[in-house]
Image (cartoon, rainbow, N blue to C red; front, side, top):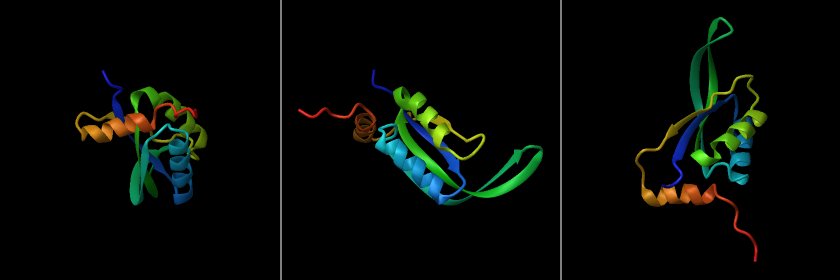
Length: 112
């Protein structure tokens, strides 16, 4: 059975942190692709108060096999005390795209 593909959600406080995290995850082959969606508003309860903040949403495509390494790296890079990281299994998708996600997050080809 093929390694399941995951779609992970993560919010960031600004463009700089979103870009830095996205570039690190892709360059380190922890994610095949990261979409950055600016201009979202998040309302949540934190430390006893309800607050609303502007954030950037990252949509991270990875595999189940790479998730733990991605989680560790994302937590090391993220500026929040408690970053959001939610992984949802992809149940249906374009098969060639899923194959590309698996290839892009696999081991880098070795030079001959």
